[in-house]
Image (cartoon, rainbow, N blue to C red; front, side, top):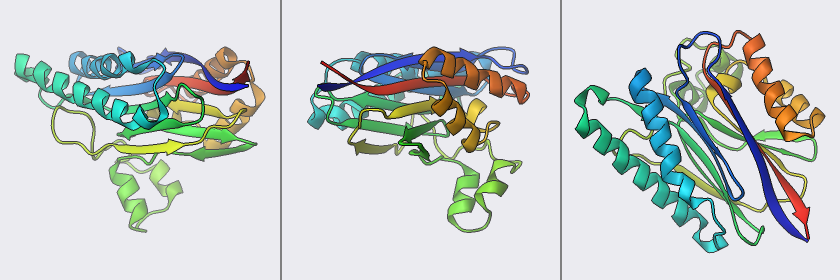
Length: 242
């Protein structure tokens, strides 16, 4: 038996925004979510550039090359965003988050790359764990012990990111993990994580084994909570197959 990744993705512009600046990739080996910023025209361009840059990584990759592949994809995204700003100076300041998971061809390992405040959660054996750490002002305050995580959730500056892909220097976080059959990954933009509590996320991930239904339910919950932002989710299950 070999471990495989099976995924679906869904996105909604929400109830307030005039357009959708999120982008996603839901593939056989790669899943990714990007949340653009910097005005409508520039934000959706930045997120699309990021997803287009990492999309070609969706192929069978040796486990010892996973992190290098993600690093290369992010370098491509950074260079292309910088070029887009040079082409049109009005795009100055545009950028995007990126959270991407790349599964090894052997099924024995996966790598995660992250910058910004989109998130990756792992639901394993009944427990939901946030794997990524937000690159945000309020997370810095939490780390310094100045506010609690509960206070961060309602802080007026919770949307202020401390780094994103903007065409310049950036320090993404990379990690590798050993997958297990039955693992369920949730990648999402902050349009979900800012309005739906982690315990509710866990309930939905546990209660909706069908990936499409699970994704639709999560988006529905974000909309019921007011849908103040674009909301994007990718559900990726680790399954054992012959």
